[in-house]
Image (cartoon, rainbow, N blue to C red; front, side, top):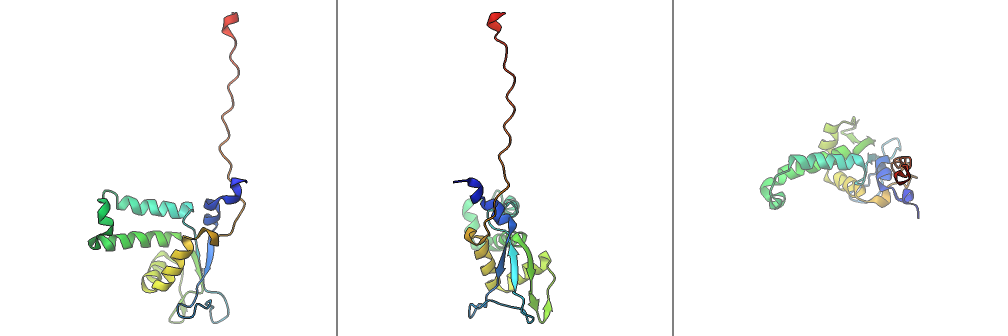
Length: 158
């Protein structure tokens, strides 16, 4: 077994196209001209996702553990979750509103996820499923071992 065949960080960083599905029929969605409607995301094992999670966590640092689940703090928790989700979204194709294809910006991504919970749900599920990311052979290598120092002379013979 070679660990490079299971480098989930590398796979997740490559990203995955989530082909959106109709929330009522589960049929894949396509634009009027036949292109798939996709959102490309980095996975939960990617550095992109983990850095966003750390950033959101730093803003919530110092909260008592029980406060995360308290209803009074739900808006802050939801904002932190959205920040991570937006950071993990790498691009999209075919996302339209009122017949106009939306530009890919952080603001647009957050607005779509807030308004269309079914899209957010599909993307969140994909981000957290490592089986959906293409397996790529990692190029990671452990740091080179430090060169061994030259042997010391045997001082007992001096």
